[in-house]
Length: 158
Image (tube, rainbow, N blue to C red):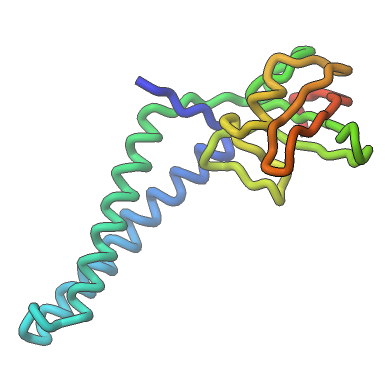
């Protein structure tokens, strides 16, 4: 079975979403379906069909979250150390062509947010960095062509 690596913060966010779907969204949609049913002929009732469609989405998301939670591998970067890039690491890099510096943390797919500097462990740049050390150069194939980067620093605390 595939494990889903995630940070404690990512795990907590999934738990919060799951709880919200079960305690708020699910009861609301059940109520909306009941109200729509009371309006009569279901074959021509747009409210009923929209509510049933939303219910399907909610139930699907609940199943997806429950599956990910059961297969979660929570990795706390604060308890890690080392000289190599691994899951949870905070990495400073520099683009060799533009000298533009960036800082990223490698996180699970569900918690990735490039605007916050969090990249998925399955992204091309994260995969290219894995196992590298400070001073190592790596290349990422991007839509605009290959780009070279150098690792400036690695830490496991924000």
